[in-house]
Length: 182
Image 1 (cartoon, one colour):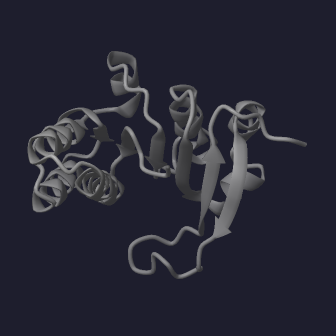
Image 2 (cartoon, rainbow, N blue to C red; image 1 turned 180 degrees about the vertical axis):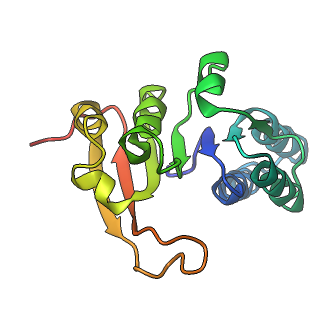
């Protein structure tokens, strides 16, 4: 249906997580007429269907505040290393929203590979350095495409992060658990 069942975000400011929360709550309100069942579903969304991880303390606080402004203070949000969280939790997400650290292995594609390996179906959207998809992300990109389909590569405007960062980025959209055709 396009509505995420479970969303995992390597958070940054938590904007992706807040958007997923909003979509899931709107869907519950539009599809569940019984007010008691609707309230129960929304509580379940907030407590069990969202997961966010941010390693930087000051950014983590920003994400928590962002979620509180969305009316949610109970989402599973961790100020930790996402690799450690992956190992601790079993969270089979149907949507992954990633903005991995570009300084990591493969310009961040190591995070993408790990995230996609935790999924059995669904979609992933990745904001990443544009050159990571054209060779700088090897060997991760080759392994990712053996198990997942690249649906789209969206070139972002050069000055999209002017004043915040000087990196050229792209958005890669993946369909999970379907090998990419040659």
